[in-house]
Length: 416
Ligand SMILES: [Zn+2]
Ligand SMILES: [Zn+2]
Image (spheres, rainbow, N blue to C red):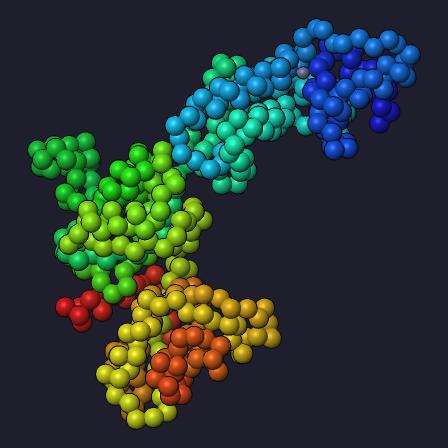
């Protein structure tokens, strides 16, 4: 591409601002902003043509001098974000069709290979200006807030992204469904059958957990994503069922999980109790809902030493719900990177004995190495059954019996 003739051709279309001129050569960045690059190109062209320098006074035919208003847009956005609690944001925009068409016309007419669209420059430049005002960071992948600028209408729309909390719940009473259950008659709109609540049941685990969270975060709603579900009439005891709570449009986010946990446990006392583990993300919702999240195994275990079923049960109690540090097992170390992974034992219980061997069921997070959980793998897996017993133990048979099951309902039956 011959630079000077190309600039000459561009300028023949009409007055163009430095931003738009620079953007047409977007990928030849040289560490410059579009405006700086555009200005440099304009001067290069003038010198080559031996013309005197004069500021471009006419309105840009592509963008209508959109970038003169960068500061105004930033202030408009900062105003819209005022009072919201967020750490990161992202600016997006709707470009008027005519504006997009104008630049695309130039791209194809002149065969430009690396232009940047006006949308990208607007989002970036306004984002920087908002950052300067608010002190908050732009995040391209997981922003707390997305602001959409409607350029034609000079208006902004604020979208508050959900917050996600990973935890585990125990359900201590029967008769509560996991999630809201619409009335079969009115399908949620309210009727005499449901006492105008729209619901089959007055409460759910989702609402018992969600209500105090909605109150604390000033959210619009809270949606429970559970790792499987128990029946309405089943208790959920043991170490509890993993879940991710999706907090919809929270106006407050900078809260301590321990405070949220305390608020839930106080408000749902007697019905549901939770432990909250970490702030999560949408990705983990997918993980928790796929069958890969948890696997259930039935194993047969041999222990070197005199030991009873009760001894085994006592030992397993300390493993149920425990987070296991597993260094890559010796048996796979030749094909896996050697590192320590943390995996959770969701539940583990001994169901019986035969000929001095023990039947054990285990539900573990995806990636938990079961054989090593039992044997300890020469101290590479901690804690382990062998470690707790202080006796050698090994798996002699192993079956995967479920991929989504969470055992504690049965454990609950034993405890009750
Ligand atoms: Zn322009
Ligand atoms: Zn109804």
